[in-house]
Length: 97
Image (cartoon, rainbow, N blue to C red; front, side):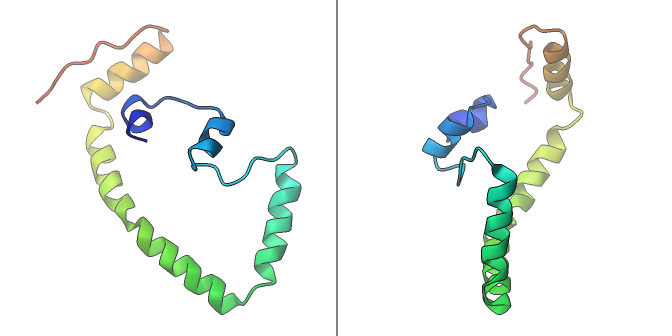
């Protein structure tokens, strides 16, 4: 997982599924999403709300992630990465510590 975080490598869905990052691969995603929505709609609304609350509590680590990302956006290395991507070249990063 660290490799993906550190490199930002884009991966195919099949690899994401093998890593446990993708819950389902589908040739008919809209149909499958609608079927899942019907399944969820048939469950107890209290249980669904409770489960959602628990999942949201687990994801509060996202606040720390946002803090780090917001400190990086617009800085020299971020701009260099974007520029290099548009210019189809390898970025030349500086260590700004």
